[in-house]
Length: 373
Image: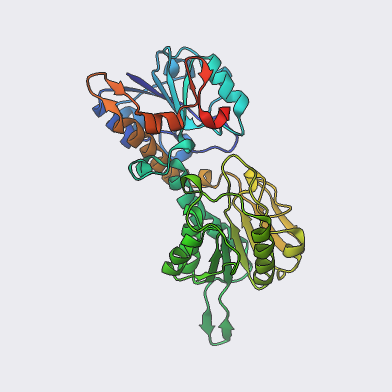
């Protein structure tokens, strides 16, 4: 069983899909691990560290030769893949909805593509969930980005020259990223409020010491959407939420938006008109900029000034903290493969529940129901 770890070629991608820690663990299972030279450089992992852990270093062709499992952060360009074993697995964040043509190419190559972001939100798969592990650190970093762009202090400060008021921060969307954003903003001393369409998150907001802001008298989602995610809301709820948000964000200094709907464009949470009501010098960080954006006018990877408000269009925030995010991503991959490792077969054998959820291609065809429906 040969496991190949590729160097990421996507612009701005600094993470790597294996660390010396997980290399040792895979070898302990009986696997041979090959690492493309320079794969960990941007994540502060030297080739020598991989070699010391027992990995074999080489160029891309040598790394892929005879590989049974290919690990990556983002889905590699199919044109760069060759020489792997028949029916090889590819486990990475494959963006199946946004890169459907690439998925079709994986099928043509005979690759069994496993989309790690399709991991079901069930208890036994929590340690395999790349979305949660990466969103956790992204939520933390988003607040630091806002603090860096904000021209004032976050905490209240009492000095001989007078008192500095605490910043008011509002988090929209209370998933993993949102919860970490709340906790981080609170640690920095801001007055924090938060909202979500899922009523079950109100207790989570309160548990972190923040103020919940919820639409009253109009039903939202009582619990979770499919797989633990939010779903599209009614027009009535959207109108009520827009009215509530308009009155609230006008008083805020920092707004962090995190709302995503799998397979669909991110919902618009803040309009241009609402931005215009915010105080000059305020900051918004749109964590959904790459999926269409929660904030009107935000552009992925760009910081803009709109109506005196700094609008940060976040792009691949996890790549800004590559050492930690790589460590967590690589553990997710190891936890996934090791959980199904068959000692007799000398390789992982997936079960139906998780296997059918993450498997996109098999036998030269696209087989995932979410892509065929």
